Length: 519
Image (cartoon, rainbow, N blue to C red; front, side):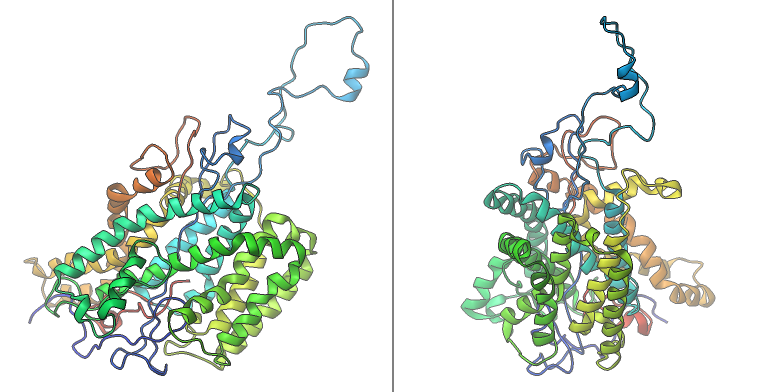
């Protein structure tokens, strides 16, 4: 009996259909690649900057040099720093002697103490961390219900939209330049590794039937600037290799999100201008666009169609970020906002029930359901946003991990799927241990994916140590290997960046779930 993690011998290359973002493959899509059942390489997380600013500088909130244009930052507005001492009350002032006397400062009370300037909104940081964990779990286990439980990408786009609206108080060109500067260096390192691995495995783009010729060579530019979807082989290597044959699709497919994020950044000055003049039409227009391009009423072919679909499905969440920052959501009575959101989400589930995809209730395969469910879900989250300066109660024990994940969200997002697949050859070595009898082999088979989930986090930690510091260089900060927070004042920001898993021995692990997008 030969033990080890292998791919399904009957697995076929994924199909290519223009839907949602980057090349998305569904078995029922016309004109798709004829071999792979239902692959869709469009996943998470995404860049969202979360850089804390120096609490000692009241101007740091608007200084690009201090990182205010961070790609992932989410901070609550700072109050007036004022004096370190509490001012005397009006009654005390009326009783004060006319002759000047040495002032004895009163100890500030807990309720009247000023908020920390440039403080982090830890509630939003916590949401981003949950989104990242959910993305990793979804890409590994491929559970469709996770897309309903927590629509990660809608949350991530909303957080990024809120930060973008905040940053656009400054000249738009400088803000866009700052976002792009933080986006590209981490992408370049990832692209260099991916291209080196693909070329070493024998990929010749000039002979690739899907990406060949001059146009395929031009599309390699998307590994440098993610304007579109980069080319990659649908099948590479052999079944006896360390990684299964769709590793390139699963690893490079995550770049759809960077493309979508970049397009939103470039469109934000115009979107914010429109939102401030016509908030409701601008907020609801993406849902209307999704009803047109996400239901088959109008089909836009190629990469343009993918980009428009992404923009429509998540555009509402991005503009919700504007509404959150501008205070529009807070002006709506909570019961009205929650009631309307619940009805919208119910419509999304009703629509999904009649348009189930190859993976059932996976909303990533149902654009209109994804757009409406994510929109309503985000409205409720932002309506109840408590704007924590610090994580409360028992959540405080996770403070360092929340800080780390927000500081390295881009790194986690880019590398997590490749690292999920890297767990397979490592775990397969367990089958060679001398005490692995039939009973132990069966136990390992039954818990294989659980061990993959456990092992992927140390590998992600290793990736953070090896390449995470590039995010600091991109933000013009001193590089840090493990940014979990520091006792000293933070003079530079913390940067962070917005189905499925690798092959396996059992059927659940035999077909990669990368065809579903991590949202």
